[in-house]
Each structure stands twice: as C-alpha cells, then as structure tokens.
Image (cartoon, rainbow, N blue to C red):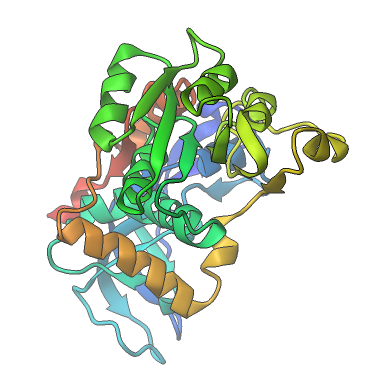
Length: 328
C-alpha cells in the first residue's frame, strides 16, 4: 500500500504521521509518479508549523524526483518510465503523487534522481537569486548567510562562476570547511564575530554590494549594516523566524538601500522560465560544474527526524527522504 507523511495539526515535528495513502489513477491531464526521493526544505517546516497557511490534514512536501508510472488522457510529451523532477508539487512526502505535466521537468542523463531531488528547488533558487533577482557582476562583493547549507553552497558556486567575491557566514569549524569547499572566499564565524563589522572590515569599510539572507529575524539588522550605500538586501528565507515590521526609513538611514523579498515561485510561474532555470541547474550538474552535497538521507517514516535536524541547523547540505519501494 502506498504511504505518505501527513500533517495532522500545526506544530512541531511530532505532528507528522505516516499513513496509508493512495492517490489513485491519473485523471485526464495528469500523470502518476512513483517517487524516488523527496527533498526536505524549510518551506516544509513553515507549512507544518502554520507559519505558511495550509489547512490540516495534508500531505507535506513540495520537491522530489521519480518516474512516470501511468499517463492520463490528454497528456502529451511524457511517457511511462520517464524520469522527472519537480519543485512545487504539494504532497511530495509520499510513495506516489499525481501531477500535471506543467509542474514537471525531465531529468536528463547524467543527473541521478537523488541529485535531481536534492538540487531542483535549492538549485533553481540559487540560480534565480544570482541571475534574475540580481545579475551578479564580476568583482562584486556578496555576503551569503548560512553558506554551508544546501542553498548556500549552490548559491556560492553560481556566484563564483559569475566572478563575485563571496563572504559566507557559518557557526562551526566543520561548516567553515564546507563553505571553503563550495568556494567561499572569506568565512565569517557569526558565533565568534560581529558579521556586519567583519564584512565591512573585509571590504575596507565600504560594505558588500549584495546580502543574500535566508535566516531572517536574527540576521536582518546586521545584514543592513553590512551593505554599502545603495546596496541590495535580498531576504529569501526566515529560518530564525520572520522579520518584524520595520520603518522603511531605515533603508535611507543605512545609505538608500534596496530591499527585496523574492519567492522562487514568482520567478518560475511561466513555463519558459521554469525550463530555463531547471536547465541551468541540471546542465551544470551533468557537466560537473555544480556540486550537490547530500548531507543525510532518511526513510519516509523518519520525516520528523529530518525536520528536527534541519531546524537545529545540523545539516551541511541537502536532506532527502528516500522511497526504496519506488526503486525496486
């Protein structure tokens, strides 16, 4: 029997439960997919906790990779056995999912299903941040928070390929090593230093051109202080909690700063944009130019443990739920 992870009520990881769940046969315009791997992301914890509204009970998860198992009528361009991946398909913590073709991208030869599941959401986020939200220019100085995390590592690699100088924050010696392996030029231990002051020191007092901040509440004020006049603050996550409302006049006080709060889903709403960002990620992986670090894997029944590890910031890379039944 097919199974899935349900959120029974909003709360901590303990509200996740494994239940029997068969989505059934595909309707017209749908395909049924055997899930090989599902990505574990902070957006999942936000939906579980109620920070992002969804009404329980619901199957958790947004990202994964698998193979087409059945094709409904009115579907063209997909075949049984074809490998596909997705980054915005609610209900992905499951053995099987139903999907519309518009939400799927083909996984090319040279990219494993695990890598596809690990890289699509975070990889497209990283590519979007470095190419669409702000087209990074050679020589720019950029501060990346949580640089040892899954998105941080991929973002660092895209930034370095664009010619940027990357400053990255982390909290342990082990994570500092991961940052350097990803290409970070200057590692800032935020548990030991005032990261804003250190970013200014490393830029001879000027400040960085761009801050990419996925942490939110605990880093927001310092991120503004780390920027040069007319610098750009890109707030794209809130792993430490949401940023409280603030007086927009502070942007002027810190040097006429720019602030944006992007969501990947607005940047890939059009099919052409989804294909372009996904292709950039998969092409780089297949060519060996983008390294995907899978830090830890879990069985479907261990989803709560994966959430605990993610929220405790124990990971240095991607966390995946593996679905072994789909691989047999």
